[in-house]
Image (tube, rainbow, N blue to C red; front, side):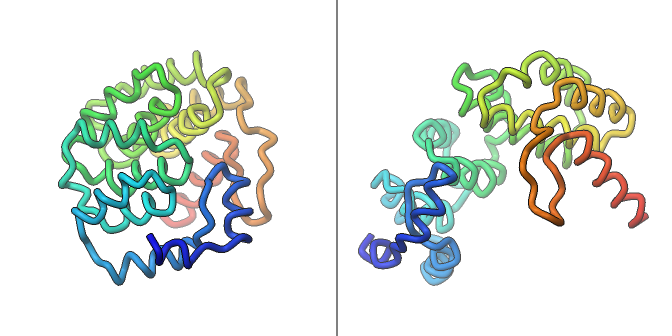
Amino acid sequence: MAELAALEDPKAREVNARHGDDHGVNLGKLRALAKRLKTQQDLAGQLWQTGDTAARLLAILVCRPKAFERDELDAMLREARTPKVHDWLVNNVVKKNPHAEELRVAWSADPDPVVASAGWALTTERVARSPEGLDLAGLLDVIEAEMKDAPDRLQWTMNNCLAQIGIDHAEHRARAIDIGERLAVLKDYPTSPGCTSPYAPTWIAEMVRRQQDGA
């Protein structure tokens, strides 16, 4: 914790605060510290229990993802209220855990929109990597009915899922684009030069074009 405190940078804190994250540690320096510590599951647990955002990010980097029980991960996700901790926990830990599918199903139906957004993030992963058994048309039904009025973080992950379905599954592409056009979610999202807009129809078209160019 003393080392983390020494890495505190006011400029980093200012930048992170704009994204809803309450820590001032440069992520490159945090990763370097994790690389030195290597995997330490007990230390990860102690760091997580501090409640400190930088400590929790470090815990995620040094933990053993497959070592967590289902209920542990559920409790951790519900405690992870800052965007970066939430995202890293889902992407670096839950996706690699044997309980990921069970949690995906449970979280997707959770009334808490932040918890539900984790379920949608895991669903997007399955759409891309192992779509067997998923009801893609049913997912599009839910997105069509609920994405427009969903809270920001849930809306973002539902939009990611919409785009992924359109990119990876040609048979659903036209409908995914149509839903994106009608709902117009993130249509005006500010996008840096050279980056692809998160607006689903634009995103789908660009990624499909790249796939075809690489074919």
